[in-house]
Image (cartoon, rainbow, N blue to C red):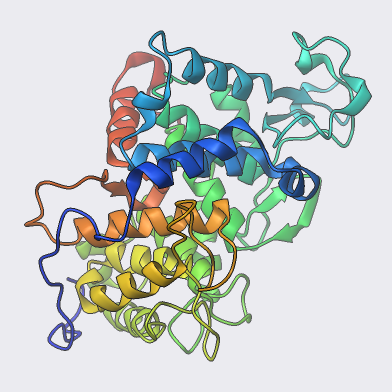
Length: 397
């Protein structure tokens, strides 16, 4: 698409509507089980990131075309989830109570940081806890779930959240997890910040030139991208970099041809880095073992760049099969390991990616993805319809 990189070595064979070993009903039950009961191990370790884990469940069910079926006839379950998410929205934390310009808006991961400061569950925005702040990553996850559930986002504090994201951007173009800790920044937060601005139709709030400069500085001589400038290339941060550039409109053929961001040679090097990650499955870094979740990060990057056809699909499915637990329907990071929600979601997303890579496959049991935002195409089309309404018009800073 963007270069003369050879596509002759590998090819995608036409495959069935889903791998024979993949039991959708069991995987649906696995995801629902985490939605009904959050395991104590997760509650202790990752409750502050509960929005992200909810996104694994909701978007995973959306990919499996089970989301509507999992809701009650009156849509009660979906409505309860939407209301829970809006209750986690922080309406403004102030450094100085007399200055609204210092307010921070967004979504908290859960209520664990609110603690005893919350006395009235109907007025969570009144809680005054300096540790109870929104973060870039949890705001991104919350918005993705709302889109997947068909919410119209009218209750999202759009301009305020965009201003908060802008304040998280550093001088070097990187984006921090929160404006209160600008030293905690990396490519993941850049991706989350760009995605938030894209979803809320306010990319002009960001200093796009500085973001592009930051991303380019993170590119290593291997062709991949590190979390920060000078750090080792990594499949996950490479996806975040490429997806961010796509959302910023910097991967169009004209931009590539003019060399205004990445050159054709840069694209070719990134493709080579990604293809080199495949052993049977995919690894995250050079000389590291395979891991189920990297199937998504690598194949997602290649899909955005138009080069998904250069991977061995049969080997990718073979590795995922060995990570699949036929008893629970979940996926593990490696064969022989216990299944978990993170690797289950990214494996399911990978199955969608690989199946939909073959344009001849019409009758598929999984929904296609809009890869740059990591949501289904159905959720993305819903977002586009929102952007076209007067209540969700483009916001200029």
